[in-house]
Every structure is written in structure tokens, then in C-alpha cells.
Length: 115
Length: 111
Image 1 (tube, rainbow over the protein chains, first blue to last red):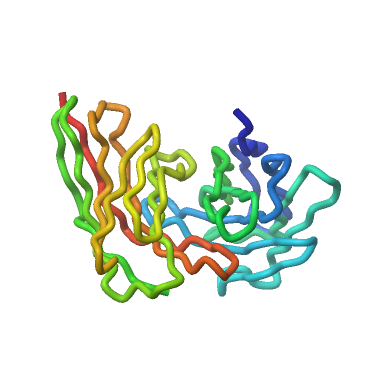
Image 2 (cartoon, each protein chain N blue to C red):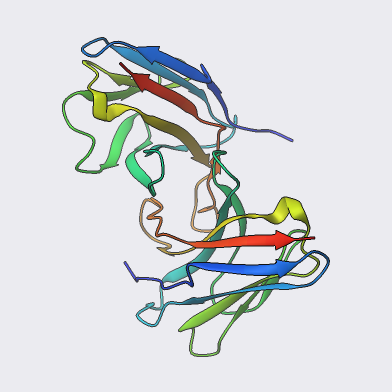
């Protein structure tokens, strides 16, 4: 069964460094998302991406964040200059599209630790 | 977007049915009810969704009241692996589909 994959599973970085989190969505899906979950808190929406552009973003998704679909398969989240408060699990999700395809399929997540 | 209300936690005996309620009294006509769950530290997992009819799949059943103001997710024979946080989320069908997670219901399945 097709699934969303994410790499790396765990990333440790120093404050101020840039990180890129990678996701491979399910191949025939058209909508892509990033969410994050700070330890012990709710899953929070960051950004949605469709047709090679951002369709919606949350207040969390400030100028330090960017997303890209550099080729036909990968979907990346870049944090330009990490802060301690960026430490969280980051989940990628995708969905097929259309009005009957609202269900999203999530990857296993990348645990980002900023020291 | 319609707000949902769920109990904070529930227990269920292994092998018994788990019935998880959700109130969404402000739901509008173009909004679907979706259920997801999150097993500890894993990515959320889609379970089932519905608009107004009851739905069943290999994982669960979804019962939506006639006025659509509440719904119940039923896991017919809960196992220890069903221990998770369950989220009821209302989504407009004509928007981008972003998920707004609440606190959910923490279901503990006990032997």
C-alpha cells in the first residue's frame, strides 16, 4: 500500500542553522501539507501546497519557513535559521484531491531537536 | 470552521466496542465529519469520514445524527493497538482541506 515517507526520522541541529526536512508524498496525490507537533501539544497546521504554490499558511509559517517541490516526487520544508522553539515533530501529509478526496495521509514524522 | 467537542478520555475493555462521541452543533451543510487517530508519537491516521449518511469501512463505523449536530465513531472490537488519541474534525468540502486538530479523546483499551 502506498505511503508517505519522511527523512530523516530525527534531526539534531544547532540554533541558527538551516534545516531541510524531506517528504515523498503518495505518487498520484496533488495536495501537500506540513504540520508540526510540539511535545505534549496539539498537531498544528503549517502550510498547504497545490499546483506548485502555497495555497494556505498559518501564522506559524513565517519568513523563516519555506516549502518546495523541487522535482516530481519530493516535497521539502526548509527552516532558514532554527530557533529552540522550532523543536517539534514535523509531519508531512498528502491527499489525492477533488471534493471526495479530503482525507490526508500522513508520514511518520521527523523529530527536529534544536540545541 | 465548525468547532467540535469530544470527551478528554475514555476507557474500553479489549474485545468490546468503543463508542467515541463528538459534538459539532455548528456544522454547516457543506462540511464533512472526519475522524483521525494518533498512536503515540506516530503520524495521524485517517479512519473514516461522512457527510450525513452512516458509513462503515474495515476500521470503524461512523454514525451521524439526522440533524448532523453530533456523531459517534464505533470501533466494533477494540484491541490494545487501538489505544490512541482520536480526533473528530469538521472540514468544508470546497476549501483546501487543512486539518485543525483539537485535543481529541484519549482512548485507553485495557486487557
